[in-house]
Picture (cartoon, rainbow, N blue to C red):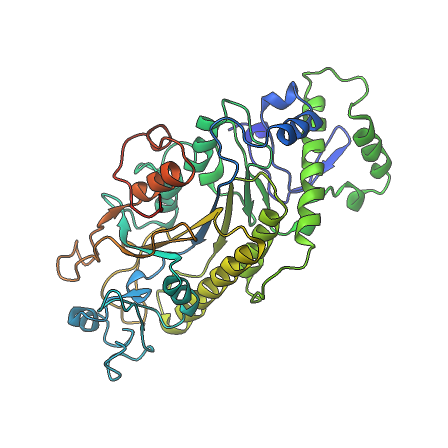
Length: 432
């Protein structure tokens, strides 16, 4: 990937008198179409070919490898408590078991419950907005954080190629990038969002997504403002690098102004104060503003619980559940609850048996969640066996690419085979 193809993330980029922060580098088509022209095109034709304008996908990553067995708890299994004598979550009808609180019973599926900190997800489940996908994984699992994330990001078990969301845009937008089509909140843009043509906008906070040349030297401001007003750089050819940077600057400035204005509005729901909640609140604000973004990405870290798992895991799961509940309430207050589906995943699960440090080590299959008003709520797929193990690890029962296929075909309405490089059995998680 060369310099002009890479996504930029909160970095100061000064060249030819242009200084930008948190811009998303565009692609060579911007050499022929100014940023103003693309924005005008998007306004006149908000749904580019193959991209349904009414649908939004939000992806939430639980980084570090979430312990699936203590998230979706098989409290009806004695083997679970045998493998986890001190960190097992109590069964709701057997108070003496375990030492880690009482599972939130999923009454429609006796023997399976949610971690007690996931009251937000339990409310969504009871409200018919939460699909719990059990045993999600892939063949020949890899227990390296980096390799497994590459596999999830590329939808390729070798972890090679462009991101699956990037390929979605590349395959549906006829080679023309969708301005503001993909937005990632965080320090770096995930590989999942990067295609050959489509690149994500990436920023940590709306305040950082702005032109920062004036912070470096106040004398740059006049030049920058003059450039924005004129829409051209003097003595530059149409295909020069300077012209490319100018058009990138204009597009980034327009996106920056709109995004910062959107997130400054007061939310309609009450939000917790966690970092994940702040990310989802920004995403909800951009959805409310009517931006043409099709895919948003947020993340929370801290799930690599090798020691002293109980407290850390409980706190992290509470952040996840409470933030996602607030997000759904905000969407409902906006009237956008039917437009948004949210995927929640982690790169792998943990081993079945607890370790000597009161934690769990890197494992394999784990649950994922899909949330939304148009989601088929309930438990999906079989819970992995706790006795038929692969060298102490769970065997996956659902291929994660089948989850992607359902989101691509049934939600984003695009054929999945070109994006995923093959045909996979779709998870039945989206209402007709």
